[in-house]
Amino acid sequence: MAESTAKKKQPLLAGLTDNYVWRSIFRHGYADTPRNRVLQVAANVWLHLHPSKIRRHGVRFKFTWCAGGLTFLLYLVTVVTGVVLMFYYRPTAEYAYWDVKYLDFDVPFGMLMRNMHRWAAHGMVIYIWVHMLRVFMTGSYKPPREFNWVVGVVLLTLTLLLSFTGYLLPWDQLAIWAVTVGTNMARATPLLGNEGPLGPELGATARYDARSLLTGGTLVGAPTLLRFYVLHCIVLPIAASILMILHFWRVRKDGGISGPL
Amino acid sequence: MDDPKSGAEKPGAEKPGAEKPGAEQGAADAGAPPERNHIWARREFTSLAASGAILGCLGVAGGAIVRQLFPRVLFEPATAFKAGYPNEYIVGEVSEKWMKTQRVWIVRNESEIYALLGICTHLGCTPRWLGAEGKFKCPCHGSGYYIDGVNFEGPTPRPLERVRIALADDGQILVDTSVRFRHELGQWSDPQSFLRSADV
Image (tube, rainbow over all chains, first blue to last red; front, side):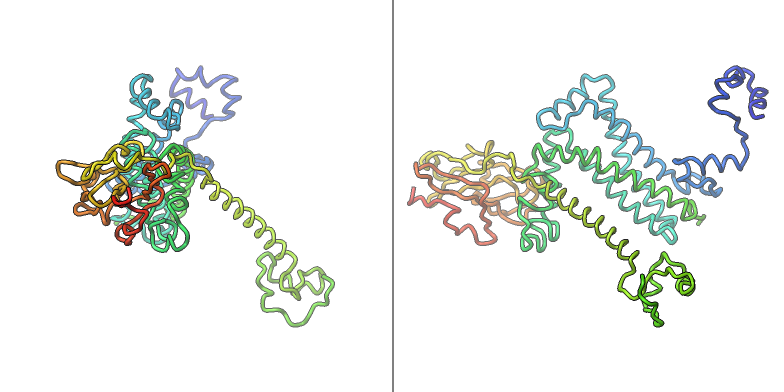
């Protein structure tokens, strides 16, 4: 039935859809009814995370600034470009620096991919703050959405950690010293850092404490590069992705985008 | 299961969530209620045992993973090295001979020789020795130290650290950067933290 209407509207496409192969794949047409629209969202494993309907004010740009969605879009950009970079980058002290040089100066579109990865990462950090500001200013952190605010704060932390671990991977002087400075802060971890409150009393030393867990030794060296690579490409993205799924799903379960001010 | 059903219900009888509220009452007729005379019903025990086993396995595995992240052997440069003979060092000068490879300055003055670790005590960068100004200066955030290692400017909270220095059997200076002495803890008076000129 829907096929016949499509045929009337767009005769050029009739040959594409009005044949046995097409019907064997799609079996029946799609009637664009409100019920089917809801069903399409509700029956799709990815789309069902979203509300199937949204309040009219929620689509106004100035209510959300699209900040959360843009943060997610930029995350997807870093994932795609990051996977491309992984085809060339080897996370060892011997190769890492030269692989980045190779990407920048010889691999076709290598510099584009690297810069897209970098700027999307910067943009994600910026937009996550914008999103947080928007959620705060619209009071969307209030019950029943208070748990989703907490999930968002964890996601913010994971985003910053993704940036921090990615910082080391070019393996140049800037990277090594920035991470030296950054991981030195872990020495001051309470209980677990060798210079933190109660750390030495509990047996934390430069060899066994929160910092050496991160660096894989007493200094920023080859083990640190590998650890940061694994964190950057495996641990943190998986953790962030799981929490993003929870984050989006909770928007729906908590009643959709919050009401107008 | 074959214990006689006691008239007095235990206070914990309503706890097991799996049972419907009516189950205990109808049990006298049906004849197969979970037994309440024990601390745990069989089902509760099984459930707790299973949960405990799973959590225990996860705990052991987690402990193993954390321990695995601390290797027994670190493939890092050796911390002890021989730094030549004392008469190779000139009184009043800061030797940068070992800075590049060992990150240590060896300083000799009238009375003693000491080894300063080239790690800024602010956030771990490598300071520079500025001979003309007679001070160590960190390029990261501007911390400055006198020639003896005591800080006098910038954000650093404490002096540079000195490291163990001794005379080896062959008369060479032996330096070990893994043994450190901190001025603010009064450790610079430790005899291992300097060589007296009278002894060399």
